[in-house]
Every structure is written in C-alpha cells, then in structure tokens.
Length: 454
Image (cartoon, rainbow, N blue to C red):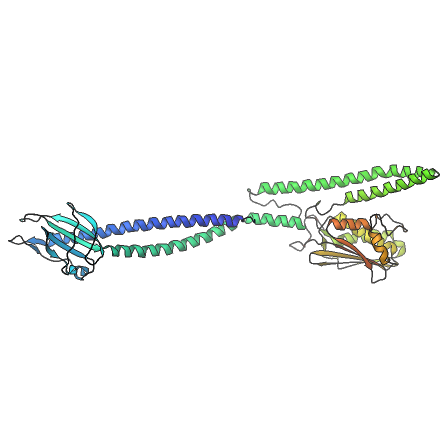
C-alpha cells in the first residue's frame, strides 16, 4: 500500500479541522442571530402593545375607546399574520383589520409573556399578551399583539445562506493558505530529496549544510554515513594493495626455487605457483573494484580517464608510433568509480595497442541512460569462435605479447557489477572491436562536473 505523502496528510488534517471549525462557527452565528432577531421581534410586539395601551380610553359606560390605531400597514392587511386584539371577559373589544372578523386564541396566562400559537389560517404566530386595568373599569383588559414566525424564519434563513456562502469562501481561502503553508514548510524536505538524488547520480558528494535546524541532524547523519563509506572503501583498497605486495615476493621466491628443481616435482610446484599467482591476481583485482555500491554518487568523466590512459600508452608504445584517438568523449561520464573505469578502459586500450598495427580509436555515446564505449584497433583481430574464450575467466588476449593486463575477463566482471556488459566484434578497421556498456552518469545541473571532480 502506497504511503500518503506528508503534504496530503497535513493538508487533509487541516482541511477537516477548518471544515468542522467553520461549521461549528456557522451554527453558533446562526443561533446567536436567531436569538437576536427573536428579541428584536419581541421588542417590536411590546412596542405595538404599548402604543395600543397609550391609545386606550374608556367612555362613560365603561366601554373601550381607542384614540388612534397603530400606523402599521400589516395590521390592515387581512391574513398578514400581524394582528392585535383587545378583549375583556371573553369578549373582543377591539381588533386589527387584518383579523377580518377572526379571533385570536389566547393562551391562558396571568402575566405578560410570549407564546407560540396558530392563527385561524394555520400560520404559527409569536404572540405577546399583557393584562391591563384601565381607570374606572372593573376587570382587566387583555391586550395581545402577534406577528408571524415565518418572518423570523425568513430572516434567519437569509442570514444562514449569507453566512454559509461567506464561511465557505473563507474555508476555501484557508485551505488554499494551508496548502501553500504546508508546501512552503515542507520545501526543505524536497530539497533534501533533490540533494540525495544529486548524490546518487554523482552531481555532488555530500549533503549541503544549508537546511533548517529541524532537518540538520538528518543531513549530518547522511554525511557521516557517506564519509564512513568512503573511508571503508579506501581502507579496503589499501589492504588489497598491501596484500598484493606481501604475496608477490614470496611467490616469486617459490617460483624461482621451483625452476631449480628438476623432474616432476619441480614442474608440479611451478604449475601450482602459477595457479596461485593467477588466483591472487584475480581476487586482488576484484577486491580493488569499487563497484556500484561502494561510492554512492560517483561520476567519472570519460574524457579525463581517456586522456590519462592515452598519455601513459603513448609513452609505453612510443617506439611503434601508434595513433590513439578519441571520438565523442567530451561531456560523457560514467556512473561509477574512477579506478573501475581506469581498470576497464585501460585494459581494453592496452590490448588494442598490443595488437594494432598503427591505429586505436576510442569512441563513446550515450543513449537511454547507458554509456557505450567502443575500443577498436586495426590489428589481426580475433576469430569469432575464439571471442567467447577470450572473455572466459583467466582468458587473455595478451598471452603472446608483453604486458601486465589481467585479461578481458576482469573487464567483463567489473562491467557486470555495474549491470553492464562487454561484447567483442570485428572492427571496421579490420581488427578487434571491444564494446563496453555501462551506466551513464548524469550531467551536473550547472553543466559542470560534480563537486570534487575535474
């Protein structure tokens, strides 16, 4: 199962928190607005009732007389839901025109209060009732003023829609801001990933020390691991070289003494010493190979290695006047250790020089992340049926020529460690063509070689 990225996880958590927070805030705002509008609605009912009380008088017979009526058009519109009514002893003394002969069913109450009732048309009303005793009249008058609850609900619904739209816009803005904040905050992790990619591809050899303090311990540990890895590689190669020098002299002494022995015993000892020297050469050669995992991020320019080898071989074969040329090497690199490339290319070029008549060409190209280096000569070449034997372990092309090369098998072994290959074919010059395929190193971001390489 693929792990969820930190960006998605943080953004999702923040989005959930924002949604629930804004939802709760919206509910609270709507509740507060409903309470506020109900209070204002009730205050309006009280004001209308006070106006009716102020307009109330009694005549000589004790009947109720209104000096004026409230100036509110809704009290004059039948069925509007806005009503007032004055009653005494169960008889309606006065009522608003909006009642149109209907009568409000008043809740039983001894003190002024607000109730919810239904009017004769089925509307739910919010009604305020107060009992008033007028001078010169026995018994109180019951004043009632009512307004439709639908007006409150309409106001609350409108406010809810506006609030929802506002909070939704705010939520989207907050989520976008959180995404930006998360991406900005996690940018050092992307830098860490890019730095590790640069190390793996060979564009740099150490992590830069420019990360935030929270990431700095990781950077220090990675750099310490790289330093430890390089130190182990250097020590292993040093020990391999020391072992080679330590064994070389005793084997030479034994071989010399074996030649002094006559008969079968001398021959057997000489053969065994030769086998031992071959085994030591092969295994020490393999021990000196860095391999793809030994130096993380190694990147070796092909042209630099070629120039160094050509200089040495020009000196070695100067009496033969060989022409050693390079083609298409500039800008190409090998994703591996420099000594490994020197071992492989040096072996191929040395063999080519030994068997060529006058010309050796080293050409390279990069295709689909793979580096192909072809070494060709104009010598006698190798028969097709003998090429596989030349690549076999212990096989050499220089068995009849002077030289110290370990043979093509070691070249193939090193190439296979890098998941590459070595193939022999006929050169266009008539000699042998050795085609080496290896992983290509990536070009630096600034077009230059990685840190520490020329």
